[in-house]
Length: 319
Ligand SMILES: Nc1nc2c(c(=O)[nH]1)N[C@H]1C(S)=C(S)[C@@H](COP(=O)(O)O)O[C@H]1N2
Ligand SMILES: [Mo]
Image (cartoon, rainbow, N blue to C red; front, side, top):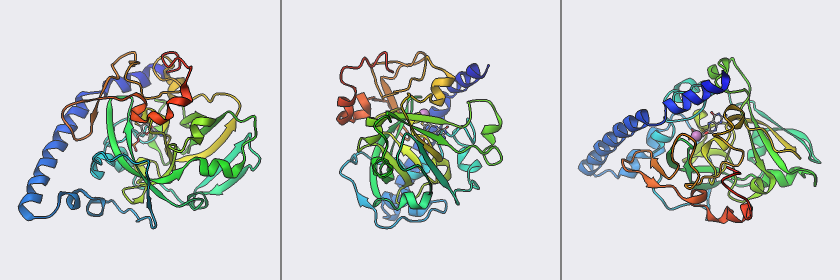
């Protein structure tokens, strides 16, 4: 019942629509490039967020991060109009519209479980814990599309080290807000609500794991997970939970939403791995939004620096 539904939605949306959207994007991009050449305005300026932002507030004092990739950044328009956010809709072009009025302030985040300093913090207090950094990361969805995004945030470890997890804490669980009145998708049983994700403690402490509150130099748009989310760039996109209200430290491996929904298809680890196919499709290649041809998917999404976290583990079993 519930399980079948979620599976059906995923399989039905996998290719035709994204190919169609990408073709449209490509054509739009070609038109823009032509316009840029004709007018002498740089293409960068045309696709930059300053020209296309919804109403984002600029974030001041952003530092560049050495952890960034130098690959071409995906246009803001694509990243903010092609979203997986099932609390709003299972259609990727709908969260941009349906999340517009979502209230992201006031916003509290509860931190508890196996931790010395249990507390409830205002999201703006969390955002001020460390200087904002721009991290340009590859982001690979389990469905086979990918994007390159200049996220803004800082390492999740900055928060974790301030709350002193006890020595028993082995995992961290992240829970999204539950609010049917604001999130129409939560009125349907497509997934179990609220959305839950989890990381092993050493994964959460890895410098690449990002606590994220912005993108393209501005506040995070609602459809991308405002006011606060995580970004785990070496894992499939569904690990990167949006709109987090609860961070819990635990000694047991958290049950993550997609694993509950379809355990044979979505594991706990979900490291990007071109050698382990999804039961219903290959993971060997991916399509970058806005591009025609597919490119090979890289182990750990190219983030080799995390390989040591999994040494000795069978990544076919621990998918
Ligand atoms: N709360 C919540 N977080 C979520 C999801 C979701 O449906 N709900 N979708 C996940 C999936 S499948 C992906 S690919 C990414 C997409 O992030 P983006 O829309 O910012 O690109 O968010 C992840 N985080
Ligand atoms: Mo995804």
